[in-house]
Image (cartoon, rainbow, N blue to C red; front, side, top):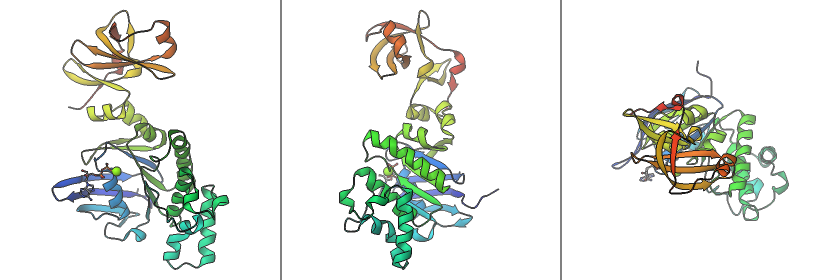
Length: 324
Ligand code: ADP
Ligand code: MG
């Protein structure tokens, strides 16, 4: 059953001359879901988002929203809205006028557009700063204004291109919780582009991993992290070792590797303290790197140093076969 605000990409392609930025991707987004589009720089994330928003033309394929083909429509008529990485607020307009801007363009009268802008400023907790100019705001406050400005058009789908990358780590974690809360309250789909796997795992109902202009894997965060389909996904999502066992390539979680009295011999090449745990990097005789994440108390009971010989063990049930 198709619900009203399903977004569907069908064999969506973008070419720039000889470069294929997005190569025939197809995906059906669940209604009112928080989706994180994740992948390394240059894999086609922003291009995908811009095609959905209408800021970039489509070379091939379709975009369907609420059962309607939208790829030929101008941005304002699609039912989508985009929040840019730089926020792109108008420096000469107050916070309230920034938020009300698109309604002004539509010819909505001042009283109506200010009333609507005030509602949205309340939603992002910026009512008290409505008369300020953008230059008088912190990064986090500017971002809230940019959010309110995108949401005033009542989009079915909000597109966010690396919305947290300009913020310091502390604020980034606070703002991501706010984004999640907003998405739940509004019950619309958020498609949030990031190259941070932590951010994707923390936020997403669905993680879509892109690589080389295609979707490599999509699914709930626990599935994508815990059951990576390919070596690329295992390495990109992190927290896994990729090792050869009986000729097959396997992913094994770093947190299930035990350093003990018996097992696969390896040499310690690095030790990294991470607070609640310690990452011990080793190299095997087959020249494969294996990282063991040890609880910090276990590590410091019997510390290991670079150069130490160790034996690595793990329960075979944690071995997860990767596609070739
Ligand atoms: P991402 O957002 O994942 O980092 P992009 O979607 O920005 O990646 O870019 C995907 C590919 O398309 C890259 O190879 C990039 O160089 C290329 N590309 C993006 N925009 C343009 C453009 N306007 N003209 C030519 N090539 C572009
Ligand atoms: Mg990008």
